[in-house]
Image 1: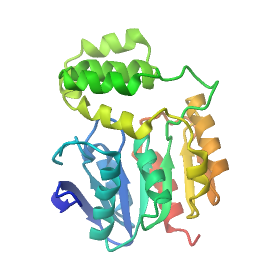
Image 2: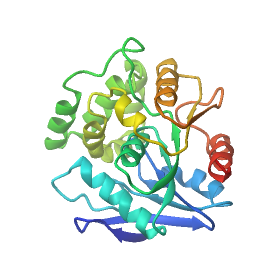
Image 3: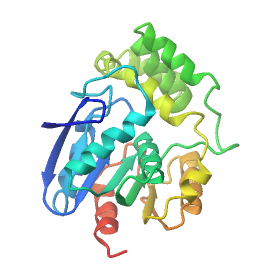
Length: 260
């Protein structure tokens, strides 16, 4: 593990593994870079893979005040460290960062996106209009477990009885301890609407991947691919949102390694 310094002086913790063209992995949800370690290890057979702790996660300092713009400064610092350009894989909410970064003109050469959770009208119950405000209020009160519960119930749409079972499990406390960053994810997601104009502005090749197990996410994947000028679609039938690294690694490797 090493650090790269972002524009505001924040030290961003990252790992690099493998050799070959640079690939940066952007994780989603309230987890640190270790969540993508299995995928990074598989991609490292072909690429130099950088995975990092986003602000509020793992060993990266949480410099206040938070701004979504700093997410892109952090990614730019990693790209510079990687040699000045990179391919980017974004999973779930990390895909929102990847999409916005490409639209902002960061030197990204290809995008791979796994189940980016934009919400199309009519495909599911919408996230409450005050979801972001609720997350920030809970964060200010130090109620991180309640932040996790709100995320699971209203953003993920996990059944209430399932969440209650998780809260009784021994892992809940450790998982909730990292939930403060969910307020930042709420800033990134805004109202969770598909950013059609942003997507239309991205001209680099992209692959949009889903598992066809969650209909509203599949609908979002189709809409993302339809809006991107140079999009390719792949479905890993039967894969849940928490995708198996062994299932998605070949699709990402093929796309990043292809002469497109």
